Length: 461
Image (tube, rainbow, N blue to C red; front, side):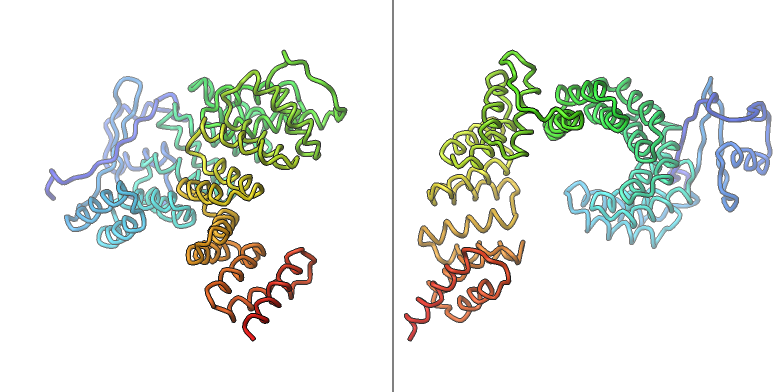
């Protein structure tokens, strides 16, 4: 074998982490004795017979596993797979890695990368299979354990998840993600003491880790320790940079208040903690008291005017309160503060639709779509706006797309029927009107469809 082509996997463990008598490690050992010892130390499966060599340096033990042979064709496919993966073309990369594993099924690198790629596209069973094969070939390929454990977590196999995530920590004791995932697993298994310890360890390593504070808040919430839960929810709000966890935490603070029975409607002083104002605003939004919700959100924004999500929440309350013109301004403010969130543009489009400003509806929905909003409502109101603006062909295109997202979108069916009628596609238009008329539920669109169908039939006679 050409030594220049040899692949080696190395894992470094602390001697203190090894159970049992370690004196044998310092003795000169024959090959078979070394195999037996490493099998015992690493808790290897009985059917594993390859040699894992080791040497001791200071307080560490270095384990080595060497690939029996490399194959140039498989390596070239592996390199091409890496190129495709970096380009984001994971499906193509998977094809190359699968071919690499077929040519040389003894190389754990191929199976590991294949497992990661499957994980990225949410094919967790396939990921588990590839990563399990990685570890069957090379049991000291420890970085496979974290992803394997996380994949098991995704499919709710919690005991398996815990086992593999714990193994990943043998060689990487400072991996924050591992502690976060272990905290989550222990919480689900109702081992709250261990869950708390794991989340606290994550915070020790990364003091502004919002996910760890959220984990602690949820545990204390489950244990009905409202004071500690809300303390950690506020830490989430402080440290969450993206805002998603922070917004969730704000809502959960409200939930804690509800559980304690504080349902009375009371005033909060303007000097109160802004999160309290948000909590009251959200609580009132949930129970349909939009006037009070608007009042509380405004108080919050008087203290924290740069919070895009609360401007959005204010717009939602104003929209529900029948004040679309005010909602427009709130949604605009939210979108200005965070110009990458398609949701804000979508809701702005909805508000413009209420005001029948269809050119602005079209502009807002187009921008929302660019930012990732591809749902039925976005396409429906975009298509409706195009119809009202007289752009029939584009209207049909958008409304048909809306129905591919949600076949039961009645407004999309109604406007698609109108657009098809304008386009002289009479039979297709009548078909959509009939779909609405044949529904067993009552909806104003039934009367509108009946009248539109009658007009259409009269004009074609």
